Image 1 (cartoon, one colour):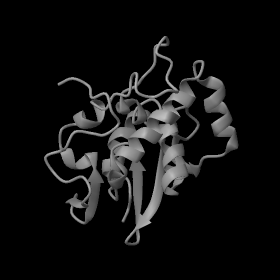
Image 2 (cartoon, rainbow, N blue to C red):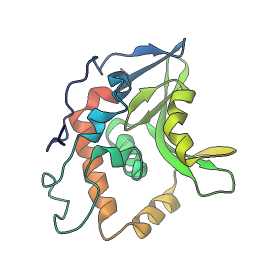
Image 3 (cartoon, helix red, strand yellow):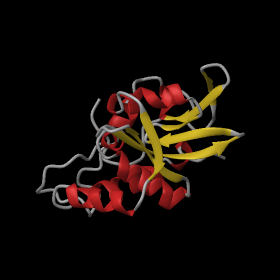
Image 4 (tube, one colour):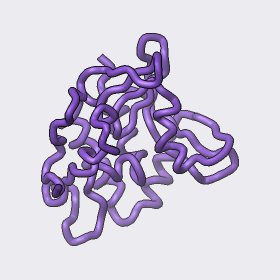
Length: 179
């Protein structure tokens, strides 16, 4: 399959807009429902379709980078667009981290990243655990975090990934909304 030149994902075999049961009493929606290792997320490619992305620079344009690599851009835009609070889960005393949003769904914590929404912490940790290997802390992002991401990004890649995140969220909003 080739990458799609749009932020709208191909249809999955299941409706991504409906919460589905997972791990007993937990539930999820979004790209979790595709059951294809997030292939449909990987295939969203905005190269040449966002004015903020400089085509002369090498950059990540597939929405997969919003899960692994630029998760902070995705979380910042989810907070901005949908109002869910952005958090960091990071290794205690280490550098490994994953940035995500969190809200409450029927009295349970709901974890939101580029895959969608899940109330299963184990399912959420399938990707977060790639970066956070040991004991961890969870905290709200702050202005220092944002300044660091801007400072450490290549040229304007942070702005590019924010634009990509916004396009993906707006084109697939039902994957990320709790209601």
